[in-house]
Structure formats: structure tokens, C-alpha cells
Length: 454
Ligand SMILES: *Cc1c(COP(=O)(O)O)cnc(C)c1O
Image (cartoon, rainbow, N blue to C red; front, top):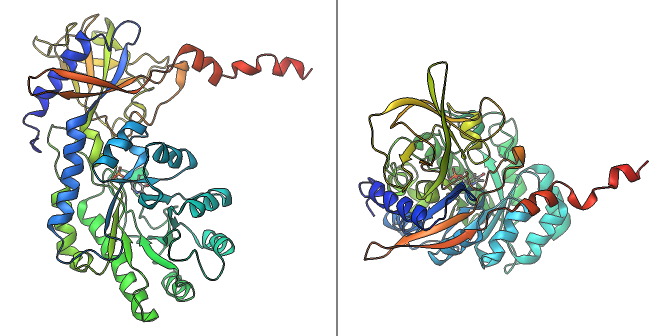
């Protein structure tokens, strides 16, 4: 696959055409998700290769674990595919942990990060041997009570502390986790925090990791690399003070942004790995094991939402295509369109790229509120009933961020792969939610519960 995306459009056209011909999107299922299996494999390979290329020494005790951030695509077959490509999972809730385990990812390749872990969650992670990054001083107290002074032992969970390097935010506030007042991690530059961290490690030889995740979409690579450098310096200081190689693994988080404006997958893992190697050479000289937690950079460009156009109308002189893809599947885009613009591709009733001179149109969703628009005034060939729209680059955070408004069902998802003969084959990834399931979710089992109270 070409990282510049030169063949991505052609491959996408073939997938849409086959999905329409196969009836994967029709009146009964007017919106579906499609995932590019070859693209996901290629993204995983690019991550592995990028970090292998900049390595100057044999990786430290833990080697290199690329743990996919499950929240980006909380789908068991995707986690399984990535596991086959050598990746593990970064999880942040009991549900995500269960998904990783259902995918057959071994505990030793799972990392638990969450700012609100309950005692029960910590206990489960420790029992399984899943790595845990502690998010706060209070959580470290809780962990102390669970593992005792001796810690979990060499065969137990690797334990670390998440640090907020407070390097500042990126273009999207909600995605910036290393601001002065971020809710994540131990704020390193707060008065006394650094000394507390060094001391906390000196007293707990079993705290062997440091973790930082500076942010996601909108954070410049230089900012992320600077956050990693600060955490690396802290690890060096802790190892100096304790006189042993206590910190043996650095978890550098994820956050590589996605280009939502073109088919290019740039900047890629390689650019980021090279920048890290230039900014923090010691990271790759073999003294530290490494954990990464990329999410969006692995799947965003390998997924799309494909929806039928139900009606076309005009209002106040404006053309509007009313489709089945709105806030329920593109929640962030609808509610924060400035931060999460999406490309929309137009296809005809047969799934062929739509012909015709582009005219400005609103692309609306099915939800009953006026703001349910995935694009406003977008230049597209005139859309009509029976056509299709594809929301591109939606393979990360869209399928796992369903919005249950109007009791609209979670759409089905299919993975696709084109054979050497060009024939596209599909495999189910997730069944569409049924009306019966929606009723159950809406408390169908408790129909008379309120009336029975009196
Ligand atoms: C969300 C998150 C990630 C993944 O971020 P991406 O931008 O999808 O790469 C990694 N680590 C942590 C702790 C996160 O919260």
C-alpha cells in the first residue's frame, strides 16, 4: 500500500461498488461500516517497521509492545487482526479489557490506563497480570494496599505511574492531555511533584514503568516528543537516585494525528519515530523496554461509513441530501464540526463514483435535531434518492462512539479484502443492532416497573 494514498481511492471505489452489489447497504440496512483489512495490516506493519528502524540497541527487558488503544475501534475482530500483526491492547475500562481478552490477546500484552479505576478493576488486572499505569497519588495508595510492600513479584503485573509532563495543549482542547490542569496523571511540574515521584519510586522498587500520553488529534508531533523527553529524563533521574535500573520500560502513549483532508496517511509512524529518535536518542539505545499506545493512526484511514441518501430537497435555496449517516455514527463531527471535519464521497445507486458538476449541498443525517449535518455547503455532484455517501477516514473513534439518539441502531460493520483478481470479499465484524435489542436497551424487560411502584 502506498502511504501517500495514491491507490486508496481506487480501492475504496471497488469496496463501495462491491458492498452495494452484495446488498450490504440497502433499505433495511441503510448505513454500514466498512473496514479495509489490507489497510489495517499495512498500518500495523508501518508502526512495527518505524520503531524497528530507529532502534540502535537491543530493546530492554520488555522489548517493544505496540498496544492498540481499544477505544479507537472497540471491535473484537479488529483487535484479533491487530494481535495477529503483533500488537497488544491498551484498555481503559472493564469492557475494553473484556474485548481484548475476547480477542485472545494475552494478559502480558495488555495495558490498563484509566483515570477512574475502581479497586475491583485494579484487583482484576493484578490477578490477570495485566500491566497497570497508576493515574494519581490516591490510586497509588490503593495499589499499595492491594500488592503490599513486596509488590506483585516478578511474574506479576508490570506497574507504572502516568505522568503529565504539562507541555501544553494542541489545536483541540478536548484531545490535549498534557495541559497545566489536565485530569490525567501526576502533574509533574506542580510544586513538590517531582520530588514526590522520585521518593515514591525509591520506596517501591516494584514501580518499574513511567507512562505519558500527551494528547491526540491536533497535537503537534514536536509537543508529543517533548512530553516523551521529559518523562525519559524523569526515568533517568529515578534510576540515578535509586542506584538501579528501576524504571525498565517507558510507555510513550499514542496520539499520532490523522489527515482528514486527503488520502495521505501522513505524517506517518516513520516520521514520528524519527522525530522521537532525534529528540530522545536514549529511548532506543536498548536500556528501556518500550510500550506505545497508538489508536487512530492504525485504523482511521482504513474505515468508512457508507449510507444511503433517502431524500434530496431544497430549503431557502439550499440543496440538502438527507442520508442515514448523522450524529448517531459521526457524533464528534456533528457536534464539533470545526474540530472533526470529514471528507464525504458521493456514489450513485450502483455504488459507482457519482458523476455531475459539483454544487454546494448540506449532507444531513436522520436524527431529529436541526444540527444533524455531517457537511454544510459541501461541493458534491447533486445527490438524489438512492445514491450513497461515504464518510471517509472514519475507521477510528466513529464505530466505537455510537450515539443512541432517536433509538437509531448501531450499524453493522464488514471488513473487506480485494483478491488478486480484484474481487472483493467481505467478513462480518459486527452485526447491526436489531429493533428487539433497542427495546431491551430501552428497559423493555421492566415495562410495568414504574407503574408497580404505585
Ligand atoms: C486515547 C489514548 C490513546 C490513543 O490515542 P490515539 O490518538 O488514538 O493514538 C493512547 N493512550 C491513552 C492513554 C489514551 O487515552
